[in-house]
Amino acid sequence: MPELVKVWTEYVALGVELTAAVIIALAALVGAGRALLAFVRPSRAPDAQKESLRLELARWLAVALEFTLAADILRTAIAPSWDDIGKLAAIATLRTLLNYFLQREIDGHQARQEGAAEEAVSRP
Image (tube, rainbow, N blue to C red):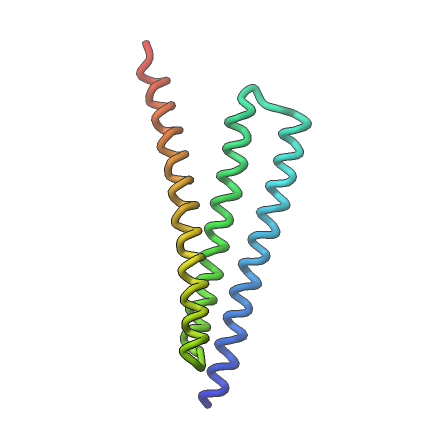
């Protein structure tokens, strides 16, 4: 029975990682399409257009990182040795740090947008 749980958990972790890969692939395709449109039809504010594209991709990458972290947690539950647990912990730490900095970037951009919107409204 314990072997069955390990096998099942490994399959679930693999499925969760596959979900992350699909999210990344779709986000990259959508981002590439939007970037191509930005080259073909630039907006009046090209920097804002690029920033919007970059942050949308960052949001989807953060979602994918959450899925990969979930897969790491599943694998930690069935890790057979301390060496495996250590490797998984290192990977999970790196992914968590990446996610943290991505989220900081997203939050900073949102704060700048809100500040610009408030400034535009408060102008006479």
